[in-house]
Length: 166
Image (tube, rainbow, N blue to C red):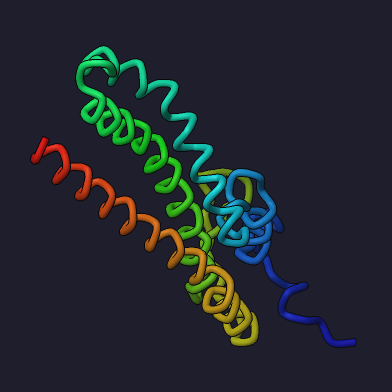
């Protein structure tokens, strides 16, 4: 019986790029970026809405809602968006890490601790499989996050322009 390259892989199971991808895809905090567009937007709206609990009172302290309603809304929205940006950066960094682990021909791993790192070169069939996963699974997620960043930047720009003309 012939052994497959996966079975002779010296990388510990939890550090194998495919398993790291699966773990990220299944984790609660990273999974929601893979939802359908409506579900994804609802999650963004929830994070933004929760940001208002902190940003709202701060904006109200600076701009009384009764006296400066437009400035209060713009400042509160911008402040609430900061939490959203931080959450999106976290998502982007996590998915980028997994992408690089899947794309690279060599896998760095630790056998028992930080002091004994090793490198393993993926066989061609595993490298091809991993790169297909990047192309068809991970890259669309990163593109969605990039489009979200662009949209948020446009909202910040529009809010800044509105602020300027108030």
